[in-house]
Image 1 (cartoon, one colour):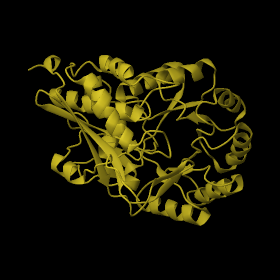
Image 2 (cartoon, one colour):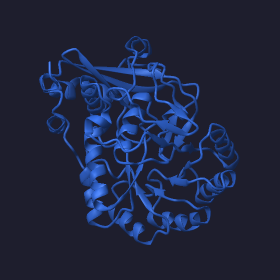
Image 3 (spheres, rainbow, N blue to C red):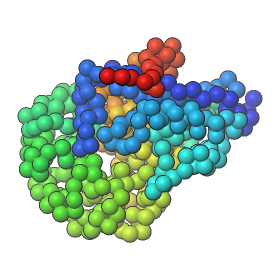
Length: 385
């Protein structure tokens, strides 16, 4: 059977409870908590005996999708739209998904759509026996530098985090700010810089500031050699981001603002973006992420890379995307820092702060379905306190 004849015949969802390695917080709240499992939703798409895996990372502190909403969106809306379709028709699938869960101000249910889209890419690569980058005809890098993410209650805690990351071979650091007052945020950045005097360093506010506060902070951050100020304002504050970009002494990088490639097109037209963050789950998967990256490069907008504390399936998908567009880092793919992936006996190789782009078929991650089923939990069960 040729790849042109593969028809999707089954879509399965598994909400899995993964071991949490470290606690992690952003301006919106807690992302992971040591001692409590981290829920990830794995999706398996099958077509005529071939299958592929994708992942969604529910983080209500970052965006509106939850584990429960992702499972029901895939099972009740996206799977019916996908069944019976040719597995190769990624463009058609994107259109079908938009009809099933339509866009509002921006893309609708991107995490759920991402899990299915990535699974289709994995399936197609496995059917052809080639990695995702070869499937695209784009593989510009074999290794990508990772940044160690620093988030803590104060200068002493973040200095300890930098020391831990440096001890594991990491040589670049991303600092979460917006969790405290402005003076405390600056003290935290100063502590990171003191602990890593020569390392690449960028900050991420996750939409925490107003224009005036962000500008004052950006001016103060120049003292610490910060290379980018990521998402300082609310995602839909287009006018504010344009104003800030025009006067900020530090390049403004957009993450939450770029859910769909058309969002980037708007910021490009308004001359309101310095750096575009490529993030597979935020943009609904690899299909739309490729479009966003191509638009950024064609528009002369610098690309950076990020993730969502993905486990190994999501990590591999991001590595293939960044490799295809030559985004060699440092990038914020922090999943390995915060969660384990016991379902994947053959994993992405990470050593001394560098990740190898997988070379196996599809995503290049072997998923043990028996382990997935052992880790699976029923997130839709009603719980009463």
